[in-house]
Image 1: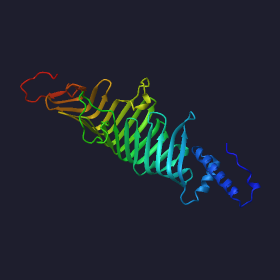
Image 2: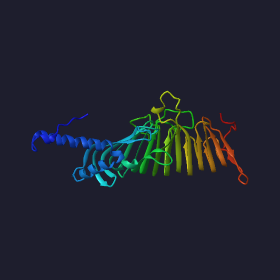
Image 3: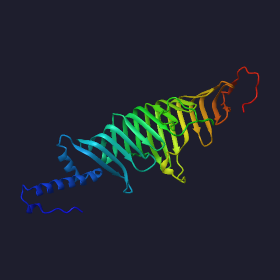
Image 4: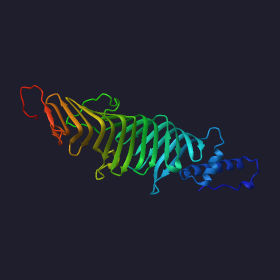
Length: 334
């Protein structure tokens, strides 16, 4: 508790009274910042008064609260200016998400934020450091909560995401992949697209959505397509479930899909990878070109993890086919 002496008992121009006034002003400013996310009328009146200053507010921290009353996110900024009703311009901002699947720190040189609705956006580069992934991109958007989930982060220009999880479909690991960040070899998968979206669907499931000119590179594997969804699932029974992003459970790709592996190229209209089952399913104009076993075509082709086997499925009017290379031995693959 702060106890102030009665300033009316002092001389109007005494240093003591001036110090009391400054202390009171700072106290009111601190209170207004703490309740900033609620946008109370008292805080708004004080903010409008500060808006008249040339430099705005410096070294601001704005907390955001979840439905349970706990702090869900914090926004730190070196300087904040007032744009319009409820919208503020922040410089050297740091956005921290403290709850849920996507706990992360995001940094940008400049952005706008609307604390009343838990929203921030900007044109400059946003760099995100998360648990098990990093992301960056321009023309970004952050929302604390939307209808489909929580902690939305989206990039509409020069978007990249790197995962510590690998997309390997075979059992070989440990090779250095071109394009993966050199200063941290633990990041095994690089994704790039014109639009990238990160969203917490539930406490145990996270989604990465990529659209337009999608390229995903992992060890001995490269996938390109028009649209892709990557799902991460987390086991809450693990020893430290909050310290990781979880494991890739499913990948779904659509539109001119190509998947390049060592010695094998696959093409289809759609691709589904189930890491739990250890299989990849190519659907629609599916074709697999294997340097050892020839070319397989069909409406659906199933590839098994850790083997060179391909199960070809046809439909009525479109029989599967297999073109074998000229090899002396027709034995089945191991």
